[in-house]
Image (cartoon, rainbow, N blue to C red; front, side, top):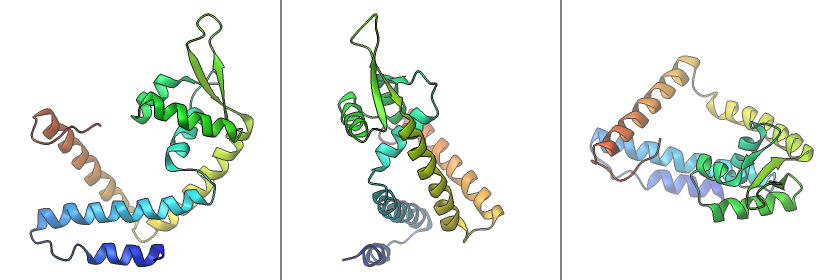
Length: 171
C-alpha cells in the first residue's frame, strides 16, 4: 500500500465519530498523522529522520562551541541514550562532531560541522518551500487563526495537566 492509499484509509477510519469536540480532536489527530507521513517521506529524500533534522537545527542555532549532549537531550525531550545514538549516526555522516572538555573528559559537546551547516541550510530551504506548498491551501488569515487556535489548545493542555486532569504533557 503506497502512502496515498494509507492516508485515504486513515481518513476513512474516523467516519464513526460523533460530537463536535471528539470530531475536532480526531480531525486534529488525523491531520497530524498525515503530516507525519508526508514529512517522513520528505526526510527520506535526505536520508535523515525528523529526530536527526531536529538535532541538526538545534546545533545549527547554537553557538560555535556547540552544546552539551545533556542540553540537547533536554531540548529534544529524549534520553541520553537516544541522543548518543543520533550523534553517532550524524557523526558517521560527517554532519556533527564530538568535542571532549579538556578539564573534564566526561563532558562532551556536539558541534555541527561545515558539511552539517551546508546540509542543514539545504534541508531548511527545501523544508520551508515544502511547508509553504502544503499551507498554500489556507490564506494568511486562516494560517494566523490556525496558529492562534493551536497555541490556545497547547496552553489548555498544559493547564489541564497542571490541574492533573489529563496525563503528563510537556510544553
